[in-house]
Image (cartoon, rainbow, N blue to C red):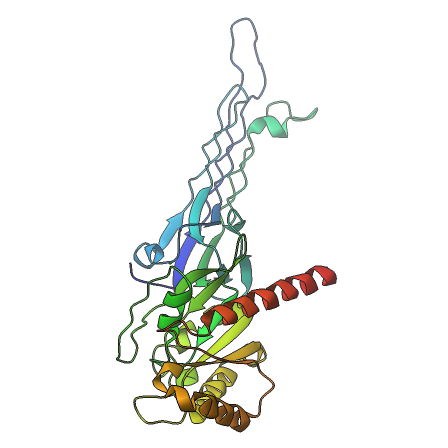
Length: 343
């Protein structure tokens, strides 16, 4: 399935039905008076977050969505049938913006959550509504109001506890395959990952967290180079970012320089993303000779001069991955406790 995380669609609520102009006409009841009923309300367009959907691709091919109109009123003071709401299913994590004003209309972060994006029109009034002591045979009715029309921009931000970022071929996909049941493509060429992947990491009984892998970043990503920039938005909801670094790049580049490059691109994207808690994960340590591995690690750590947590792992052999996942779970639990204390 093609991954689509941003679309623009047109939505319209249904028009309200007109009220009826009618008079009671029954045998033996002359001049029975007005009995025109109201019209029905128009249906509204509603977004609903649903599990099991992970892309907005369906809305790429169907751009217009209109809710049903309300029926006209009838005699004998019978109201018209209201139009049913049009429910549009979207992935959990979808934001809805007014495409013209950029106003955020809704942020759907939980399954079952709904937001009305185009209100249906109000019903028209039948002539019964205008009966009075001085106007016993009103011939006045009203049309229903028009349904709201709006152009929407839907944007998907994946919901995950931990997000992976780094250069292409840093081993992000190998890592998520090693610690979860996710199966992203793994190969030795750049941009193996073309769209985000989610995986559930289980740490003991009843303990788990969700991890997200996005396409690799390259220099100039914040200005649109490569594939990663368009997916950086998915890291906005993550609690912790894991910066995965190849300690022995095939192109001969320096790991320290690569770390600085990614930090620069993240900072250029948004200051909020750069301020997120970030851990450094030195991957592919199995490529170092075991005898000198500790020396290499100490040299890298001393050169980095950072207060960020640093972990050394091999996604291929699994070395260090268990401890990293356990520490992530502990940190996420602590963050949840802090959040509860603030509420």
